[in-house]
View 1 (cartoon, rainbow, N blue to C red):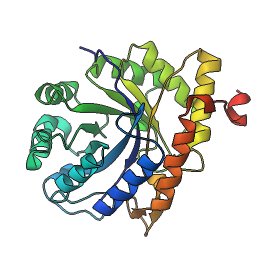
View 2: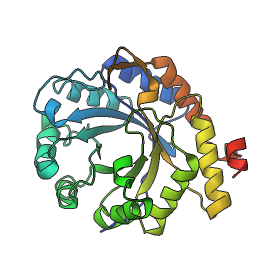
View 3: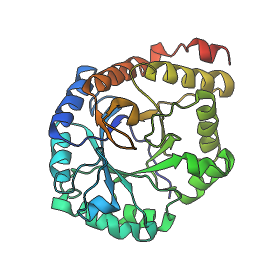
Length: 287
């Protein structure tokens, strides 16, 4: 059955790996008015893969070790953030079993330390996602609508989300996949309307290259396009990862979170998510 209520939107920072980063991010959120009582709640995202879930190491600096994960989630929950794991795997055929292993780590589900999971998996088996939701009913399920899922066409992707993932609490439109590629507001509006047109009840979020320099203008553009072109309004969830980091070397994930960029992004998000600020940039007004 589809979710029968609308979850609160979130503003996310994904790729945290230390308690110092948790403190910095939570301080920035609360400084700019984001709280669990606000319309947009602060979200802390932690990356986990099937490899790190088995206790393996990784050169990717965006991934915490498995042994550190419960403590990071606990620190985030204590600082009143919506705590999420963003999970990827090379073998999604036993996804529900992998979630059992993950959520059993020091009781992170039972202790309400892991409150949501985003599945960074192309077209995961809906039976597996359904099994996870059935076993962990309080867990918020976030389905990532990635560029690869949209390769067959926006219409087909939206229909698939509607048919296969009615149990989702959130759908994140994410053509960037953590690579700091800025999204096209006009294209994002089309995806949004296709999802709504196919009856998707989940709260919809957007991601792709968001940082302090563009988050307000992108939200303004997207909202104005929806209003002018489609007569639609929506409070979006947003998430940022790659654009908030400084490169430490070559290769994906060889980078570190920049606290200044995080503060700038959260400050811009606060301005962009104020209802009376949605006037639209020159980009949107030309559409």
